[in-house]
Amino acid sequence: MTQLVHFTKMHGAGNDYIYVDTSLYDVPNPAAQSIAWSRPHTGIGSDGLVLIGRPHDNTQADFSMRIFNADGSEAMMCGNASRCIGKYLYEKGVFHKPVIRLQTLSGVKVLQLHITADDKVESVTVDMLEPRFEQPEQYTGAEIKLPADFDGHVVAAKFVSMGNPHYVIFVDRMEGLDIARAGKLLERDEAFPERCNIEFAQLVGNDQIRTRVWQRHHPGLWHGRLRHGSRRGKPRFGFAPSRRPHGWWYARHPMVGQRRPYLYDRPGCICLRRRHPIGLIGQKARSVERLPRRNSLLATMAEVAGCNGGSRKKQWRK
Image (cartoon, rainbow, N blue to C red; front, side, top):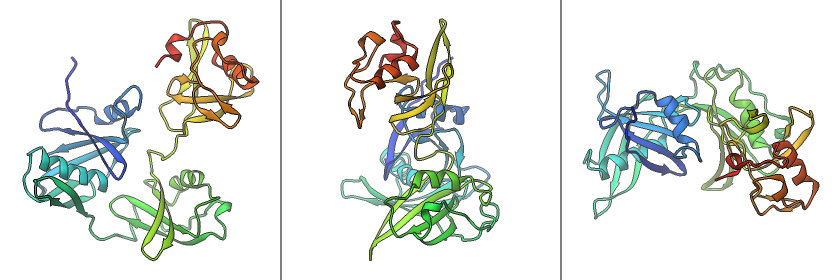
């Protein structure tokens, strides 16, 4: 039986989540729903799912939150999502007080709402409590080895827990450092039993810090894997719902065993409409005859896609 669930889409500092009030709607499998709803083209598109509910376990709080990343993993809390919850509860008329106690997996957080003269929430401040620099279940204390390209550029590095584990690395510059590769490697370091958010920070002024963040479980960049199957005897290619930047990348063709270029546009689709250093590919294609054969790269893509002369309407359509 299909259930209609009303949701609200909000973002705090770019962290966009789907918010559902569980006092009105039941979400029986939030991990699976977070995966499905977070997909950008077949779902709603978001960084994850946030459930707003009543506190449990006799906790002295006004409301509770559960947050699920786009890969289905449950996070302990999120400061940006907490701020959105404060605005949601006040402006929806659910709770009309400027201070809200919010139960999370990392404890009760206090939200301070800043209200304008026209009774709108201008901003929300979250008391994250004191940071903890020792948290054995999150960080064993072992030495962290950084990739070679960071040699000579690390100013300081420190573990800190705000409920969620973070490893903050201060560098003298961001340019030329492979932040994505380092974040992916360090997140899974044995020193972090629960994985870890990896922050890279650069002091660019007396009162200004530039940061880049690799978020655990739900990576900040797409690193999808190629999948293939068959449909009516023809090879079909797409991507598992993990993350890789839109654009060109390489995959090994399972039949000819050679690395071939792909242009990824969305899960389950190869689309010819992104920029590439060799020129602009300006149109989508339904079959190999319609491919603008400006260079051998396009012909290679047509071959890899398995659409030689055959219509691929399902694969190419929006």
